[in-house]
Length: 145
Image (cartoon, rainbow, N blue to C red):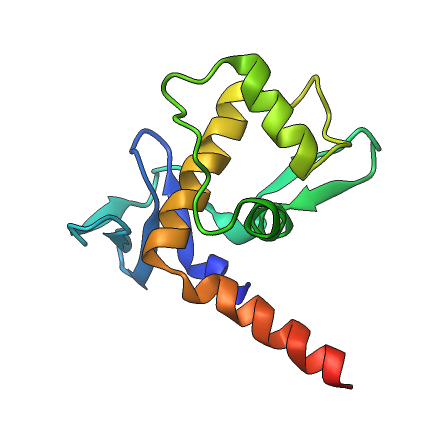
């Protein structure tokens, strides 16, 4: 899921952004929604690349990469998670996430984190489905060996 290296979340802004090009004063990004708006993000903005995000587990020395979480969601829920993150209860959010990652750290992972993961997954699945096809193709190649 190398394409996640190009996808970022910008603190204080909704949605996800594709990193287009670094500039002198920041980074040029393009929104992953239907608008595809490009803008310059200041160098002091907090930009988190999805490839570098992982989820805490109960094991102190272990965490699970976000890409693994996305593939597990794909495996269990298909192309879209049918949960309305604006109205779902915290209990239902954690019940959903326990099926994805049973050993997540219940003290460090908040319901807002899981809601963000669901939103990001649905956005990526809709606008960048090729991210999930790359993994499927590599798994098929390994199975043939």
